[in-house]
Each structure stands twice: as C-alpha cells, then as structure tokens.
Image 1 (cartoon, rainbow, N blue to C red):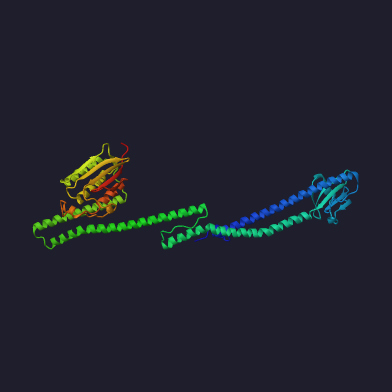
Image 2 (cartoon, helix red, strand yellow):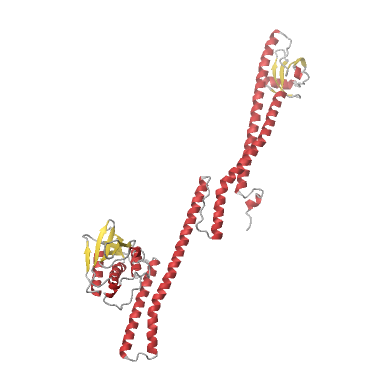
Length: 475
C-alpha cells in the first residue's frame, strides 16, 4: 500500500494519536510560554523606558528653571549626565553622576537639532543611554542623558528567570499531556481490542466496557456497541433461520418420503405381478391416488409458505370477512355434516384489505384443525367482530383444548400436538392420513403477510383461536 504524499512529506510527524496529542500539547505550550515570556519582557522594557523618559523630562524642566537664575549646572543623579553645548555640539559644561562619570555622549549639531525639534527622549551612544535635548535662547543646547544599564539588566534578569522557570513548566505540561493523552485514548484502545477479539475469536458477546473520557468517545463507544449488538442479533437470526431451514428441509423430506415410499411399494407390487386380483389392484391404485393427492397438497403448502417467506405481494382489495367466513363455514358443514358449525357476526361492516383466497384459507385451516383434532360431535363457532382499528375472527370449539405449554409451538412448521385417543377414535375416518403440520403455520404466515396476527386465547374448555387484521377504514 502506497503512503499518501502528505504522509511522506510529514514523516517526522507521529501517526500515533497518543504521541500526536502529546506533541501537540508540547508545541502549543512551548509557543504559549515563549509568547508570554516575550510579552512580559517587552512590557517591562517599555515600562522602564517610559519611566526613564518621564524622569528625563522632569530633570529637563528643573535644569531649565535653574539656568534662568544661574549659569552653573548641578548634578542630577548618579546615573545622569547634564551637558551644555554650543550650536555645533561642542560640550561647554558637563555634570556627571558617580556611576556615569566617564560615560561618553556624542551628538552632532544635526542630532541635537533633530532631538530638540522632536521634544521627546531618544537613544544616544556610544554608551547605552537615553537623552532629551532642549534648545537654549543663545543657540546652544541643554542635554539631559541617563544610563539604561540598570533597566537593561532588569530586563535581562527577567528573561533569565523566565527561561529557567519555563523549562520545568513545559516539562510538567508534557508529563500532564502524556497522562491526559493516555487517559483520553484508553477507551479507543479498548474499542480496538474489542474489535480484534470480535474479528479473531468471533466473540459476539464482546462489548466496550471501559470508562469513557469525552462525549465524542462515549458516542463512538455507544455506536460501536450498538453495531456489535446488531451484528450479534443478525448472526443469531441467521443461525436460527439456518436451523429452522434444516429442520424444515428435514421435516419436508420426511413428509414427502412417506407417500413416495408407499407409491414406490405399490409400483413394485404391480411390476412383479403381485396384484393380479382386480380388486386388490383397484385398492392399490386408490391408495396411490390418495398418496399422490396428499403429496401434491404438501407441495402446494410448501410453495405457499415459500412465497410468503419471500414477501411476494398478495392481492390487495377490500374483503368482507362476514361473507368470507360464511363460505368457510358452509364448506366445513359439507366436509363434516354431523358437526354443528355456526357463524356469529357483530353488527356493522367488517372489511379488511387483502387477498380473499388467502384470508379464506386462514378460516378454512382453522376449521380443518377443529375437524382433525376433535370428535365429530364437538360444535365449532366462528365469530366476527371488531376491536378498535382491528377486525377480529375467532374460531372456537368445545374439544379437549390445547395444553398451555403447546400454545406457542403449534404455529411452528411440521409441529403436531397429537391429540387424545378418544378424540381420534371418534373421528369419522380412523384411517385418514395425519396432517402435514403446516396448516397453522400457514395461518400465522398469511396473517403476518396482512399485517395481522393469530394466537391461542386462554379459555376454560376447548380451543380458541383469535385472528387480528387491520380494519379497512375508508368505508
């Protein structure tokens, strides 16, 4: 992988966030301390210079007053030089303080005239001094100069003190920056370690648990944990789906193998001439036809579940639940004429939006479940009503009921709750083939495809299935 140009140009800049923070703190602190030191030194130098200029102006006024009454100069201080010069700058009279007795002040006539016209102090040499010049009525000049050595030494001492104290200050800031940087990025290291464990070990339950230091890191940790949670949920969902698919394929294979085995057995009997009796051959063909019909129905149910699982669009149009349930009840009466099957509809319209064939299959499968698992003399009732924004279809029978521990599992594919022996013995056809175990799972899938639900309600006797569907409001 090629290194970007900006990284090649800044190879000296560390790529570690830890060292970047530390170096950034060091750079900013050093610049800040240096700027503060320079500002303090400049402020002190300016203050001392202004004070010196004020002193020179005060001495000048005093000497001008003295010259009005006397021509002699008097000393003005240990660091002050007072000069009287002629028009071209030659010294006529000099008074020097003890500390600047030998100090030299060199000013030409042009310099004297310029400084006198300016009226403010300025630097003079060769000895470091500041001076003010006043032009006298006789054409000469009064020069008041004072040494700046003390002020320069004071500023120099301040610079030395700042330099000496600045080094440990910067060192303390660097140590604090290293500690703060390590504390700041420790949650990032925890996130990195968690991600590596997640990637290498597949530890889906891993979460970032280190204490966070900033709002941004906390937000990152929360987002990372949320991502891990979503990945964990998706993985578990896919694993569960794969397990369900394996169970589904295994159960479907078993269900298809039974009729295929029977058909194959009868085919071999015919092939080897074991069914030479016309009556036996006719019975064998009838059984083959029954097994073929059973296998065809199972395949149709599997295809329907596959289409519902894929979310293929169903027909969407207004459906009258009362009319639909009336047709299903009529069919159930034809299938089991000796059973009492009634329909009770609450007043008012009972319309939903959906596929009428699939919705009718919901009621038909629930009634078929009653026929398959209860004696023929057990009555069944279909109720149509409304609760709020939902249409309700109840299918209730007076049979042995469903054990509470099985009420959640009966909607699983290929699950069979069985039934008691008395119920099975009382059925009209003791030799009827058992169901495929897909009827109730198809009911649940169709209801879910219509944004509804189905569940087993608790009741004192019998079984009570309740289907909820969104009501059609535009009526």
